Image 1: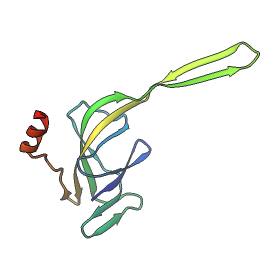
Image 2 (image 1 turned 180 degrees about the horizontal axis):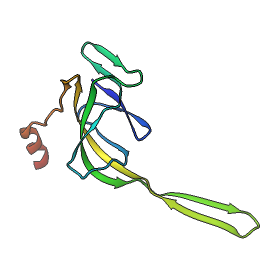
Image 3 (image 1 turned 60 degrees about the horizontal axis):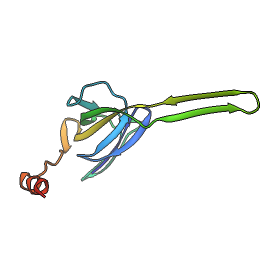
Image 4 (image 1 turned 135 degrees about the vertical axis):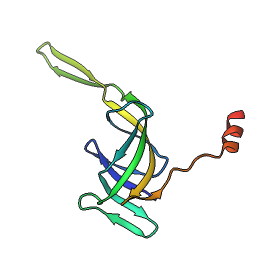
Length: 125
């Protein structure tokens, strides 16, 4: 089961428990947010296509951290004119963990919790 959401002018294909990096969203780490602009939603019974968004669909998510992207250098030089400009830029980003998918109040996919026994044995190694 997956969905396509739109946020920050970009589209993202997501599934439950995915961790994605999106353009800056307001909120502190640990805060819950909701994506209401769902373009496509798949489920057991088929596919829900929006025109442009699926009515009544929402995706729950939790903010993991606020971060910044890699530095991008914009360097401009005009030859033989002693003219150079160097400017750097870092985009503000938000890392989010996708939670439950809902359609008209009905939960379609909930995040799967890791089994404690498996998590403990993996950390012991």
